[in-house]
Length: 248
Image (cartoon, rainbow, N blue to C red; front, side, top):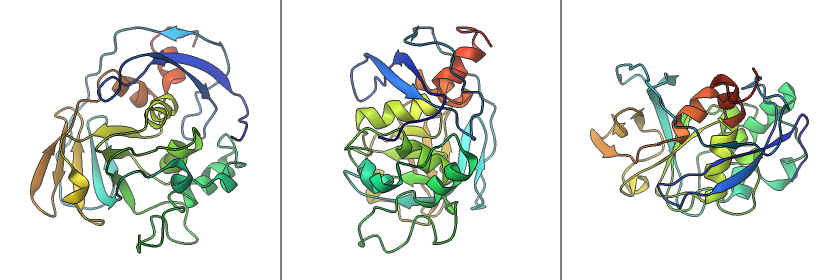
């Protein structure tokens, strides 16, 4: 794993919808997307009750990516089961430091570049830093493999707002929450079998709902729970500062 500048270690409650709750440690870093990360404390445990009251936005069929604290709207990119972190961001790119703006952008250009050739449509077009797909729909065990914070960071740098998967590898879920880069949402059914890359979708966080405007179908999502306000704040460290758990 590449070393990050301005790194700190933090502890928080983990995801409890697919995996049991436990206390886990994260290594966090300053990111151009969330510049509020700064090294202040080490091994602090957050056990506060999280609350969020998002505003709402109306869904449209415009495929232009849009986000609010309550919803995400755009085109989706569909992958299958067991997409590992080496497919999300191959090890050769782990020397890129997310705290450096230029290298953060480069990480976005390499997001999902490790997918096999069976995926005929590139997630990020050659020469681009951002993907036209702002939502990823996946199967079982998304983000499995070696632990690397670069995986959710690369997706966030590419413009991904959320991933909807049947299930996640625990470490990917934790890293997504810790960095605040993407919302890791779980579907109640196998949505990846019913959606296609390029479908226009909306995710309503408050209602835990995925709407596929291309097919007209709707799917229930599992509530994001305690992780929601942490991601919304920009990651676990930013959330701790926002809520007064550590000095601002």
